[in-house]
Amino acid sequence: MSKLTSSKIWHELKTHHFSINNLHLRDVFDYDEDRFDKFHIEWNEFIFDYSKNRINYDTITFLCEMARKSRLKFAVRDLLAGKKVNNTENRAAMHTALRNFTVEEIFIDKINVKSQIEKSRNKIKEISNKIISGQWKGHTGKALENIINIGIGGSDLGVKMAYSALSQYHNNIKIHFVANVDRRAMMPIMRDLNPETTLFIICSKSFSTTETLANASLVMNWMIRSGVSQSDFDKHFLAVSSSYEKCLEYGIKKENVLEVWDWVGGRFSLWSAMGLALSIGIGYRNYEKLLKGAEMADNHFAKSSFEQNIPVLMAMLEFWYRSFFQTNARAVVPYNQDMKYFPDWLSQLEMESLGKSVSKNGEKLDYKSSGIVFGEVGTDAQHSFFQILHQGSDMIPVDFIAFAEYDPLDNQNQILLANFFAQAASLIKGRTETEARENLLRKGKSIEEIQDILPHKVFPGNKPSNTIIAKRLTPENLGSLLAFYEHKTFALGHLLGINPFDQMGVELGKEIANDVLLELNSQKETHAFDSSTNALINWTKK
Image: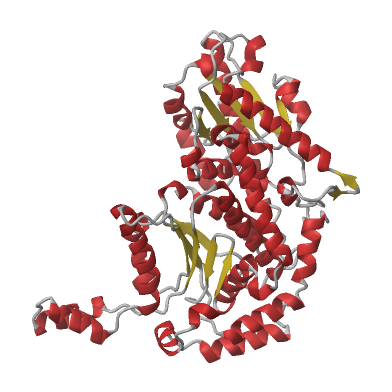
């Protein structure tokens, strides 16, 4: 047994789970009218309501005790102080430093990186202002109109998600995102572009990512065919990378390279120069507000007690369900169309960080790590996977997210919010057999009809959820929300004894893809892999 599953607190939680497992949330709310008051946090423009979870005071007490015994407080301190918390790669994970406007000195490996961060921010600001104002010209002297961000994973998804979420702040520059190496992702965008007014940002931390460099070569060739000489590429190409020399070798001018450091993990790189396209698309002033909103959440995470700490509570609840209710998935449903990429971003953040089967010390886990994280915007999601949430055989906790922006004259917004509140309420309450029968009688169904359909009209309820509401979808509030989930992921990784900052599983597929590519380019039959892969490659080549 592992140190975790053999610990006293694990067995106390297991006993506690047995004692409350048969309690129904419908009865709990009927019994305790003040439950919301006891299990919610108001912070800045947010409400975090966790009262719809299968917990009581004792649950939170046990979970907080577990967090204390795990020395989570010290792990948070080490994270924010620049210690090498990424032990498998011997690196710090200091993405929080990129959004810190308060402290004068930030040390990583005994080097004060504050001036480097400020230099990077100033370059983002300078480039953004030049492009938005029209000062940055293409090779024919025309102002830029379109920016194409070429990246994948953390070099794409976070920036794309935030740009979509902040659509109310878009300006005159149109931002496009291309990640997939499939040229059908790039071609529809390029079809409507004018090379005279288009700028490409090549985003790759290593500057060796196959998909990104293939897409970069595609657009460079397109520019040359369009009559743009390579000597004018400095007007149309920027790069963001930690591999400065590789960018220069690729033909990017020195002054057009923005630096990212190895202590910035890919899926946390939105806060770095990887966010350049976002800064251009919403303006640097709003981009800085996003950073400052995240900084406020960093301070909340660092200074609040576990009982009043939003990301820590989120992490502990996830641990509670995965470890003792044996849940396999969690859904996230933002009720805002601009947040359409948020579930994708969160899937990457949590599953790439916590999808591990060994501890940070290399020991095989004997407990569950990350489950599946999936989602879709409401109300679309209600007409797809909500069926399994309400009546499926698995319990799937849900994170409901909305922005009030309440307008009594906006009927469609009223409908949206009505569904937001109703879904969380109906998941806990369900519908009993008696309630279902009475409902069918009111609809004029006969006794015989009711007998046949009644089992299908019963909803078990007792399905848990968190509710997060902010007043408005602003850059500050989005920054805080993203930071909350980042810190929740770190805290959960610590509780599970997992390093959330490496992604060795991602690398394996890339390595084998390079080997397969060599075989695809060969005229001979391949026998280099398993029989299935060999047969499929050979069939495709024919």
